[in-house]
Image (cartoon, rainbow, N blue to C red; front, side, top):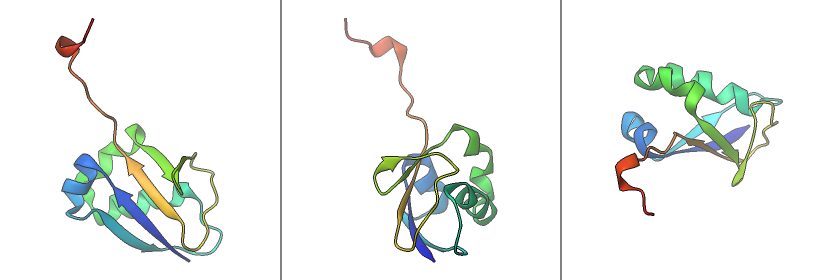
Length: 87
């Protein structure tokens, strides 16, 4: 099956691409995507535990089954600066 992986922020910068087509075996889950991505782009391998994931615009867990044509998104954490709070 083929899915499209969309990368954001630091992941996109490290990979040098916003979207990456991935070929996965039938029966793959969302959890199967990260090892492939980390292998392809070793500079982001340490980011795995802090990522949020979505499948077809809905947040998903690693156990989420994938289907041909799915849109998968890897979302790094969003940082903020405490000194810029409004109040």
